[in-house]
Length: 199
Image (tube, rainbow, N blue to C red; front, side):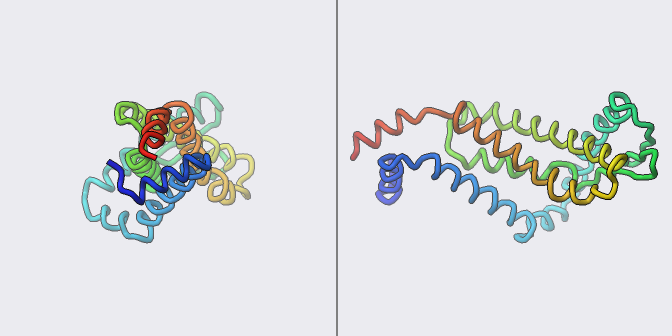
C-alpha cells in the first residue's frame, strides 16, 4: 500500500515519463551518500576496529594481486618479481596492491546500491554476485594496466591511477546498474497498471 505522498510522486513520474531521470537521480544519491559514509561518515574507520575488516581487505587484495601478476608475467611477458602483494617491474617501478586497492569499498557500494534500488529479489540474488565478479575482474584489469603504465609511461602513473582508472570503477558500476534497470529488472507494466487503476 502506497502512502499518498509517494503515490503522487510516482504518478507524476509516470505521467511525465520521468522514470529514467528518477532512476539516475536515485542511483546518484545512493552512490554519493554511501561513498560519503565510507570516508567522511567514518564507516571505514569504525570497521577498522574489527579484526575481520583488515583481514578481508588483505584477502581480497591478494586475490587481485595473484591473477594480475600472472597476466603481467605470462601474457604480457614482463620480467617481474613479486613479494607481499607487490609487482616489481624491470625499470625499478612497482605496483603495490594494498587493502585500499582490494575493491572492498566498491563491493560495498554495489551491494548497497542493489539492495536499496527497486527490483525483484529473485533477480537480485544472482545479479549482485555477478556484479561483484565483474567489479573484481575490472580491478584485476586496473592493476595490469597500471603495471603497463609503470613500465612505459611512469611519469603519468599517478594521473592515470587517480583520474582515469579509479573513476572507471564507477563507470563499470553504472554500466551494471544500467543493465539492471533496462534489461533485467523490467516489470514496470504491473506497477503502471496499478497506478492507473488507483488514479
